[in-house]
Image 1 (cartoon, rainbow, N blue to C red):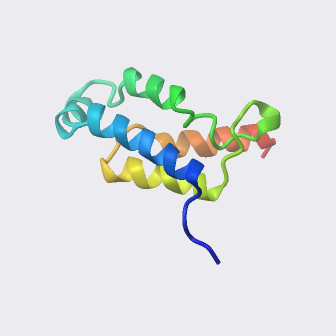
Image 2: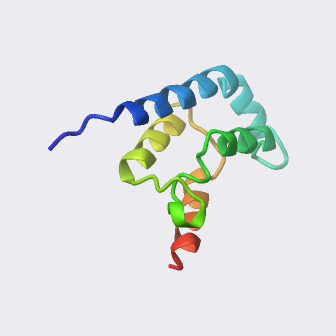
Length: 101
């Protein structure tokens, strides 16, 4: 069994990593944690632009039909910088709503 990421998955990882390394610094994260909302709309917008919110939804529903390996890429990168935005709960919700589950 091949556990290597495809070129597309690696490119996706690289783009997400660049964004997080440049924009989701430790200091930026601390400000988000200390804020009233506990999330940052700027980052949610960036996550959408990077395709993270469309990733778990099927193509037939306008999503990217990202499977478990694609979601693993996202979760590894978000975990690496301790993203506080509730991406996983949102992604599961999107996937569930898109499939009628």
